[in-house]
Length: 149
Image 1 (spheres, rainbow, N blue to C red):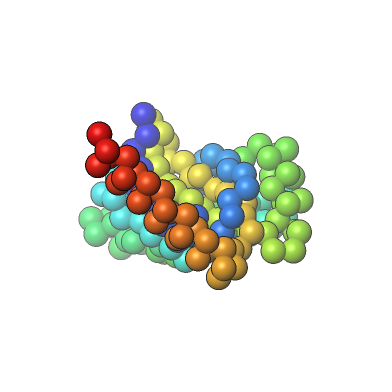
Image 2 (spheres, rainbow, N blue to C red):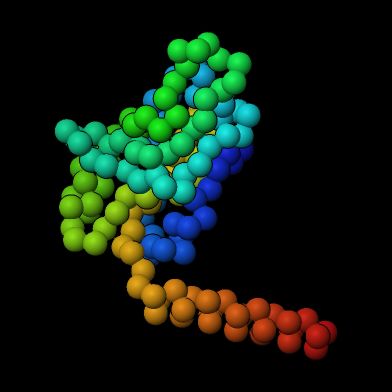
């Protein structure tokens, strides 16, 4: 069972997501407690490949207010746990021009915190307009079918 903590709503709007992976996350105790309280923001977050490891950058996990004053830094970089072959595949794709590794959602899977990351290419303005137009026509078709029943 998965309990979603936070979703990056802008990710699918601004990027064509081509592939997704589930990754573990290296966290401190106060970060886990803050996540259990439902506090997290992935909006500005992205992932970077450094020295054969993938890091979650600019993901905001606020300080847990009941933690010791030496808790954690809210925007620190956090290491993602993936298999070596997955890291190689992601890093090869990420060095191509125009591709970015984006965190899509963060959730609990059992007692563990997982991050769904995706690799995607940024959308142009006309792509976003086409998506909106398609969504509106689908909505109108659904309304028309519902009225004809």
